[in-house]
Every structure is written in structure tokens, then in C-alpha cells.
Amino acid sequence: MAVGMSRPRATHTAAVRALPEEAGVILTAGDPAMGIGPDDLPDGLVVADENGDVICFNTAAARITATPRESALGTSIGRALPLEDLKGRRWWDLTDPYGGLATRVGQPERNLLLPGGREVLVSARYVRESPTGPVRRLVVSLRGTEARRRTELSHAELIATVAHELRSPLTSVKGFTATLLAKWERFTDDQKRLMLETVDADANRVNRLIAELLDISRIDSGRLELRRQPVDISAAVERHVQAHTANGQSPDRFLVRTRQPLPALWADPDKVDQVLGNLLENAVRHGEGTVTIEIAPAPAPAKSDESGTAVTVSDEGPGIPEESMGRVFTRFWRGSKRGGTGLGLYIVKGIVEAHGGTITVDRAPGGGAEFRFILPVSAPAYLV
Image (cartoon, rainbow, N blue to C red):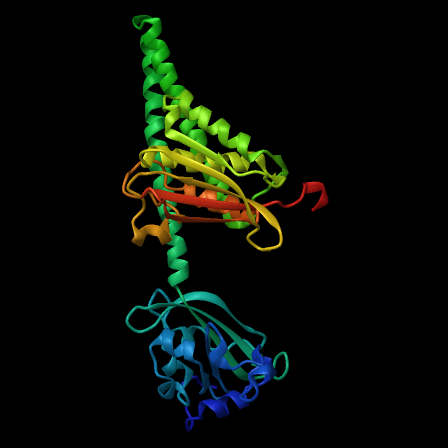
């Protein structure tokens, strides 16, 4: 049957009642508790009858195609959806759903073009009365490409950032090693030590970047493994403060407040160290004045009757602009000061949420940034 054939237009309600269960969803025009209607679907739904005429064109399809429903109902599927592939060929002529292979059951999702060059993801199912019988219904699903484009852009941005971050330390490593190999006898021991220390620091930088990429991969795929053990959160904070003071920060810059008694915390100690290290480093590097770390018991995020531990890290710097608060935990957010990959807070959020916790950002009483995360008490791994 030719796709271009038409018949008198059907109303949307009548079209809904005409749809069979074979269309893949339960479509009813009556009590919502008995099923769902086409307009309840998040994706575009277009259904054509055995003649190739549109009998269902839901709200999402009208939005995605920018075609009024009234204009589409009753017209041929080829006119309602004038789709072309990326080479400019008409999709309906290529697929020929009504006159093609009698064993074909549909078309997999692919990227097609609407008039004006707008891209849309399209998949189709051919509903037949028998395995090799004529097509009784043509069910087409439409989705916008915005989400996929954002994902592709994020991946491209990640690759560009990684390439940039790797180039600098590797160039330094290559330069110093080549110089030492070619002119070893010309340098004093102090000069050699300085160059080797620089190589070592740059190698550590590359290792940190690779570790961040692995963490992102595990977080995005839901494969971040936690090895829960008893964690003394107060001792962990003290270790990080001592590390900063050993690196030249004044001990007076840090103020640690602990409200006892703290509940016994079962968490991954390495991951907790990663969270604390990132938050304190951000406060020291981007903040000003005193860095205050408060540790206190708090209700667990998911259950108010379950205990947890809250850690708040704040500074007295300029803080984070209100309009940027919602982007702090996204990839590549660096704030007003450049430096780093912009992946740290994204990883911190992933680690905290993997523990079943929450993390927020706000303005500190002293005007700077305030990060607060809550970890539930949880249970040891062998009891989970």
C-alpha cells in the first residue's frame, strides 16, 4: 500500500480508540487508572493505519515536529512526517513499510532529518495480523536529539580537557628527560635533583588525572565500588589539616569543630579521604581567611529516624555567585579562577551519593563558600 494515500481525517479520540494492543502500549480514552493515553508518553508517537494514513499524533510528536496535530491526523504518513536520511533521501521511499519485505517487523532507531534540517531520532514497528501478512498498523516513535547532543558535547569537552591537561606535564617530562640524557655531565647534583623532582611532580599529576577519569567512568556507569569499613571522620579531617600545614599553610588558618558523640560510620575510607581532600583543597586554593570544618551528627538523608554524620567545610573568601550554585557539581566547573580539570566536585558528588549521602553548596556565614555533605551510618560490607 502506498504511503502517500489519504482518507478523511479522524479525530484524536477516535484514533486512540482505534489503536490495537499490538501497537505496543495500552491506549485508552477512558479512566486513566485503566491505562495511559498517547499524550502521557514522553516520546512522540505517530500511528498510521493499513492505508498509511495517520490515526494518532500525540502532543510530543506535535512538539518535536512543529506540526499541529490537526494538520497531521488523516494525512499520509509521508506527508505528516517528511523524513529524510543524512544523505537527503526520503526515508519512506527507502524503507517502504507497506510494500517491502513481508518478514520485516520494523526499523531500528536512527538519526533522520525533518524539513529545515532539524534532527530527530526515529524508530518504527510494523504491526501485522500474521507473521508475513500485510501491515495493519505502522507505529513510529520520535525523540529529540538534544540529550544525545549534550552527551556528545560533554564527551568531546572531556576529551579536549584531558588532552590539554596531559599535554603540559608530558611535555615537561619529555623535555627534562631528554635534556638529562643528552647533557647529564653538564648539570650539578642540585640541578639534576630539581629537574627530577619536576618530572616526579608531573608524573603524579598525570596519575591523578587518570584516576579522575577512571572515577568518572565508574560513577557514570554506576560501577563505583565501595569497601565499607569503620571510619573515624574526625581523625581523617585532622590528617588533611596536618598535610596542609606541613605544606606551608598556617595552622591558624584552620578551625575544626567536632560535636560529640558521633555515630559509628561505615564508609570507604579512601573515598572519604578523596572527598575531604578535594573540599579542603578548594577552600584553601580558592577561598580566603579561616577554613572552618565542622563535624556533627545529623539525620541520614533517606531516613530521618536513622543517624548520619555531617561535615561542613566553609571559608571566608568571595564565595560562589548565586547564578553558579546550580553548576558547581557539574563537569568542568572551575569558578572564577582557572586551574585544575574542573572534575573534582563532580567526582565528590558521585562518591557521596554512592554512599547514599547528599552534598550541598551554599554561602558561608563569613561570606565564602560552604560545602556540606552527610553520610549515613550504613552497615559493614559483610552485612549488606
